[in-house]
Length: 90
View: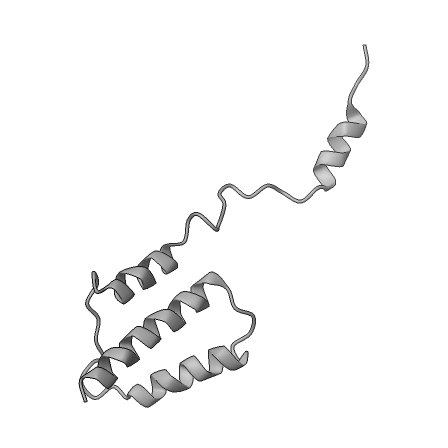
């Protein structure tokens, strides 16, 4: 009888397989889709400064907030949708 110890060792050193494919499960992206489509109605609170939101978008786009991940991308999309709404109100 032979053992497959070598095969087991190779599998242990390989990168682990994620439990799910992050390209298919993206709750932050789904939320951004809902905001952009108007299915979820968001607006800036009274007294909230749109300039702060613009500064956040600028910082994200310039790389100041680090590498872009799906969560940051969704936050920027939501911020842009809010800015579009506030600019349309003027």
